[in-house]
Image 1 (cartoon, rainbow, N blue to C red):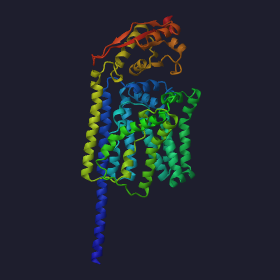
Image 2: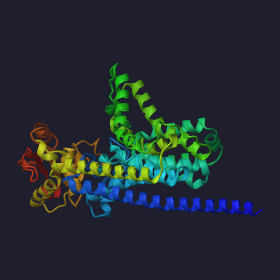
Image 3: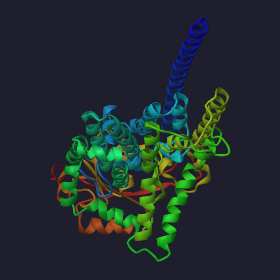
Image 4: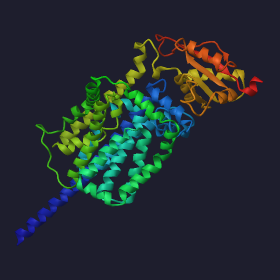
Length: 517
């Protein structure tokens, strides 16, 4: 009897020790994740804000689009531009907050993976699932340029998390948030349709997910998504589906026979290249030879679900390219691999002992530091090896100051518009505190917030690159804007990279009608 009681006491003591050990692992892993997330976010924010002389291509475009608060723009849905404008406005019409917004979206992806991983993996494995994706260019190198891919990533990640919670736990809140995040994904980029089709396919194949369609939750998701995206759908209808026309042009309207094979293979190869560093890092903790994990219950359901979420969009994109022959841009895969680390750890046996985890953390930190230093070096020193000024070397702030100075010398009215080359005008619109609106390429279809009559009434500056577009714009001035005064060409020499060719800009000024009188 005493031996029985002693054995029972030992088992209770061992169980308590395991619980204490699990609590310690949970606490330490949580602190590790928090420290990593903070350093990653801060590090890439500093890379973007300190090593780039000028905001990059998409950053400028999003800022000047968002200033107009449209329900759609000729290239993309509106959410990314709105977010860029909000970030800029919060800090008083500044450019740098958009860098912070970009890395915060990446942080949102990490948070979604970690939160989902905590329920289906061990505490340390949940951290490893996040760190495994960090070497991908999609979560580091390209995260400093805020664009539709970046906002789509966080919407995809949160949608996957909320849908999982909705299927597993039910509850109207989860389904409502699922619909809202799906709506955000659609308003970021239309490739959200690939994710939606993949999840719909999973819900039809898997019995427990299929049963949810008999409840009100999924229909609440559908309703909330429809409410979120319906104004944009109306905008598309009213604007001859401009975004779809742009997408068609990007994919390619006249595919070749060989393109039906090479284009999907090219896209798939680009995605493998993007995640190859992640697989290399994963080899440090995967057990060799690879052995499939035996799971049951919720972890097995999660494995099937996340595998569909990961592979479904990739397969559908390749099928679309194979059938249409269209060429898919490599960056269109940016949102597809957020849960790749979790999928790897759910499928294969891996090590979570302290030595393996410590080695993995050191390698992940070292690789992240190398990537950040590489990006900084490219931005800070790359200009010495280029003859032409790149986007991140462009003197956007100096250009905006010169434009404002010329305008102020001619009239006391506020500079309401800049028209002409979108890159030149977009920089003026982003860097001037007055934030003049951009009349993109002097094309009303591209900038429906202004037209020729309004531009003449309020006045503005017309800018174009010389000599590339000089003849074209001088012809436009003589026919559409004869009242405009042609100004001397503005030449800006790089202070940072004297080896680069000067930026030469043609200019004309259209005074407001009241000033002209």
